[in-house]
Amino acid sequence: MRHAAILIALCVGLPVSAAEPETKVFAGEEAAALRCANTIALTAVALAEEANLPKAEKDVMLGVAVLILERHVSGTWQQKRAALEVVRDRRDAFETLQDYERLSQQCLVQFPIN
Image (cartoon, rainbow, N blue to C red; front, side, top):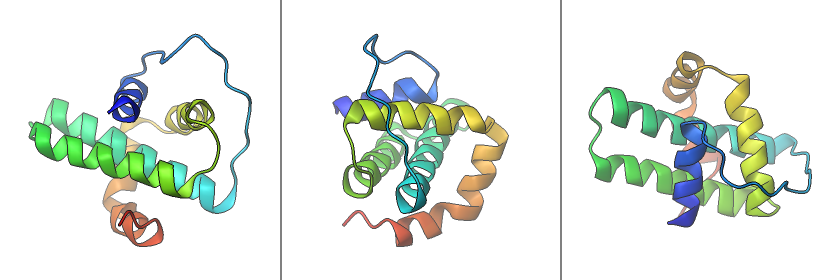
């Protein structure tokens, strides 16, 4: 659940910790996995806040994002967190929701969690 808490903090823009992670640059498939995880997590939080998405469904979506990060992105959780912050800050909420509508199915095919 700690990883889901990290994702929630990232989605609402809260600092996760004061420690600076070692910088890691992600590219290719890992960068795509980060974008998918970010899109799914931010959409879950936005829908829970704005559209009354049930908590159980939000938790499933956050769990999917965590599993994508665990299985398809290398590095420490601090490095992944820092990379997610960069991805999050590159797109506004509207663009992220558009990404979700357009890419969510592809994300699950490209980055399986089971």
